Image (tube, rainbow, N blue to C red; front, side, top):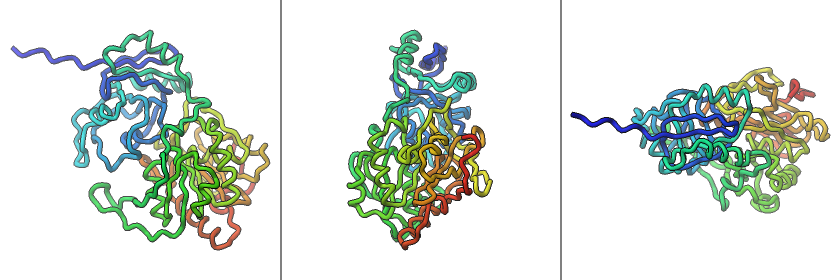
Length: 409
């Protein structure tokens, strides 16, 4: 007579509105509390897990099967996951991929991230889409499964509004990054030869992804990464040819000290920003940001270039957007260069008289399509022309249409 197979451990996901989901626990045995967002990417769960921009959030994947390719060190976008929890429909405990080094469950367990599987992720996503972003509490700890207590923890926890999430993910000391992109398949084909560095770049780390750094190296930048609180004077002492502003977590309006440093640097050097860096640049130029109902998270967002009318399929991860009307009111000669076709929100901006531009989405992908990778080459072109003494502007480089401010963004 064979023994009965033990039931899998249970987990609870409780939302601040009182909705409760039960499922199968995996990952670390603990309670994670954070704002819930859903990601629509069909691949790249490891890059999503290790993206520091998800600090303070619980991520739910809409693609149903997660974990089937395992985890490997080459695909990590930072040194560890920073999110508060992970939600999937179906967890694969036995990955099948030659690059896999360990199962997803093992990776999350040693990283301290709780997970829940087996719940109706479609119902969860519908709840967020209809009711807007809200805080949740995810418990994979058998000793903390009381639904009422978890709902109360979700209700009493702060959301992302006004929250500076950068300090938790930025580097503590400056460092030089030299690794370029893979040439072919990561782990199989050697990395492409690193070009001889031509331009010095200071990259502000608000939660920077490694593939951004690889793309910058690929363009011939000598990249020095600095902590988020590095002053403008300290950055300029490194004698850079340009400044880069990275992605990162939290509410951009909460990172006030950084805005002032960027404002001073924007008067001195060419500048390119991605995601949170794009929002901080807008704030430094006198604009405002606003919270989106449930944000953009995934690898299938349509971003339109207003100059060419071409649409790129973009990787995005943000819960806030730049308010176009605030840029108009600020009086700065700034153009909106790109918009999201789903909701008209600002996806790119450029200055008409200074070498400054930025994009809301992620041209480095990881995960996601590579439609927008050309922005790194455009940044290099702007820096080269500026160093040659040309009066180049961000609008000339980023492709802004004359007078474009976006369709009702």
